[in-house]
Image (tube, rainbow, N blue to C red; front, top):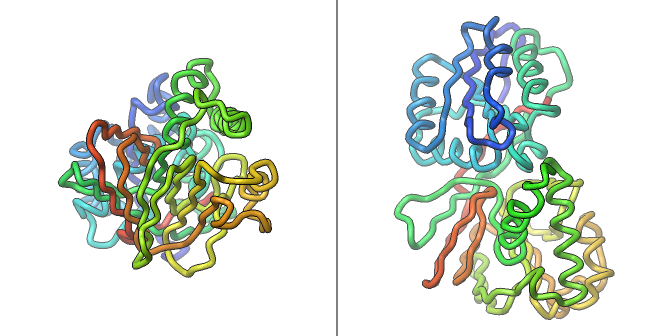
Length: 326
C-alpha cells in the first residue's frame, strides 16, 4: 500500500474507553485531536458501534484508521472490516498501545504510549517524515461451532495460554503491572509449574488437532497456539515451522521432554535437536487448523469458555491487513 508523498491522508480514530490504557479517560486523546478538526474520533464498545463508525469513516474517505484500544479492540475492528465489510478497499491500520498488554500493537503498531503514538501518526500523515514501514499480516478467520458469526483476529491460545491470561488478570494486573512485564511474569509462573509439575500452575487439556489435510493429532496438551503475530512480548517468537503458509501453529504435549533445554530456544525461535514431535513438540505453518476441545480458550486476549460441551473451532486465513509501523 503506497501513498503519494503529497497526498493528505484523512485519519479516523476508534477509541475503546474500556481498554486498559483508556480507563483513566480519553481527555488526553481529545486534547491531541482538538487542533485537527478533520480527524474523526469515535468511541466504540462493541461490534455494532465499530461497524457504524467504520461505515461513517468510509463515507468521509478516511484512509487511515487508528485503533486506540487493546488486543480485544483490534479483534473487534478486524471482525467489522472482514466480516461486515464496510470498506471495499481496506484502510491502513495504525495501532496505538492503549491496551493492558497490547501484544498485537507491539508487533505491528506504533511505538510508544497511546499519546505519543497518536502524535507521531498525525505528524506522519501531514509530512511523511519519520521512519515508517507498512507491514502486511494475514488475518485469521475463526469459526466456532457454538457461534453463527466468525471472528477475525491474530492470536488464538488454549491450555496454558488460556490459563495464563486468567491468572494474569486475577493476580498480575490487579497489582498494577502491565505492558510486557505482566505476561513475562505469567510465563515465568508457567515454566515453574511445568518444570515442577505443579498442577495448580498449569493443567494439560485434551485437544484433537487437524492441520490442513493431515491426520488429526489427539493428545493432552500443555500449550496450543495459532497466530499470525510475528513477535510476542519480550521478543518471543515461538515458531519453527518451515511451510510457506499463513498460520503459525505451535503445541506442546503433557509428555514434552527436555523442557529446560528446549523452552529457551523456543522463545528465541532457534533450533534445538530435542525439539521434535517424538519429544512432544510440534510447530508448523498451515492454511487451516481444526480443533476440538472441551476447555476454555482465548482469542486476542478475550476469554471463551465452552464447558460442558465440546467446541469445534476452524481457523483459516480470512485475508490480509496492512499496518503502519512508526
